[in-house]
Image 1: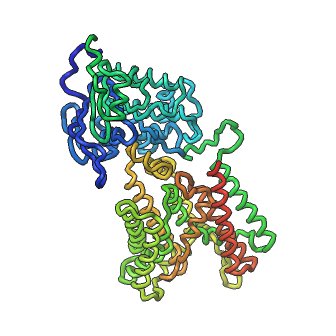
Image 2: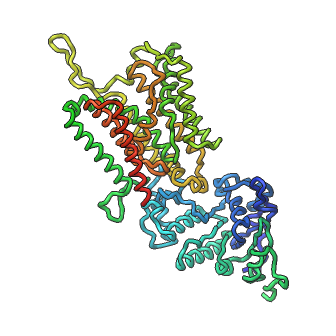
Image 3: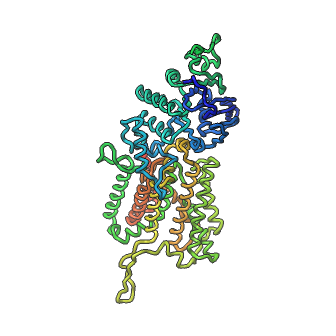
Length: 261
Length: 337
């Protein structure tokens, strides 16, 4: 997959990103890029700044310093709407679902379909939501129940469907399998590969080393707000990654492991 | 609940919010039956119309209050805003402006108060309870200051039309030369209430703004991340509540044909009670206009029936207080599940 040189313009370039909350420096001078059809793992322990970095890309948080380029052009992502306009969709760890609304209402929240009189087009939203959800999970029923009554897996499916329904170019997945059982985890992995093959760029935040090594083309590791390593996945093994996550440095005797490949 | 289809897995059983509404409706019917026994005059067409008239003010306030409560907020200022709107309209009429535009400006004054509430809550990040409590004092203070706490009277017959007029009023001249009212007619305020309730329900169920109001109350962060403009949605809800308080002020003052800067004290509590009895949750995300209308009528019927049964105003307060606590308790039980 990585035999060809990557295309010239990255989908996303985050350059020297800084984020401060009062005196706390959550992200320091982090640069990362993402090319079409690539999965980049963003790793680090809790509070390392990885979610914070991704929230800036999804428009949920503003930058303190640095710049973000989409397709080579500098953009200003002040709100989640801005990010969505550039095709950046996010699956949040918390799923970001309104519990009292049903699946269709959540899928189209903020981007409701309307009739030509400007009323909500419930029929069309329901039909589209049913299609989108059935593509991910053919057994998805009770579309008209409030999502608080659905299982963790069903809720996750809604959050994923919402991100991909609107033709995402860049997908940020924050711990997409944390709440899922084995079969649903496998479904998310399949989906990730499918989307990647369609040319979507994916940032995957995960704690699950198994997922990371199965799905990612590259990884970056964050520690105390800094980017402490960016590698092609072939060049590292689990021990290297764990060392970076925990200590912030590679094992002393480290050499790139994938040179033979 | 946005999709009010009532199709649960057991199709014949109503869902939670429908159940709440049905129990409220049953309560209303029980009250009517009970009061019919305690006072014979209660169950008559004329008294029915009186209840309709008396409830219209609370009902109008409850429409706006329901929207605010669904966003997870509360509006304590509506009683004072009602008075201030009346004072503004009254003073403008006294300055020589015709009734209709003066009333429109009164409603605009109410909407402005609501807008300020929204700005204070979203931009200054003051909790709705404190922000609207402040507005409650400010609006009442302005109303009293502008009038010197004295009522404005002699506003002309046209000012009384909105509150006292009615459709289909049938009056018959008797042989002795005195008119006899055959049918008191459907009061304008009742028709206005029905129209505004239908409009409010339409906005909440069928329009994007309604969907956004529910989403903000259900999960504000999720709504924001989904691209809902949370601040604008909240400002919209508080402005609507202020405008409806203004409209309620016009109806009430017009009925009295006098502007009373002291009117509407504690009306906000009746409006909140009506919404909560009708199934709105103070935690946000749940509520309906139809439920709040049932709630308004429960309070209206309770007040009217207790009056006709000769219960003192003090006892009435005690009873309504108990009803409100009971309704909130039921709401809590529902949320605990």
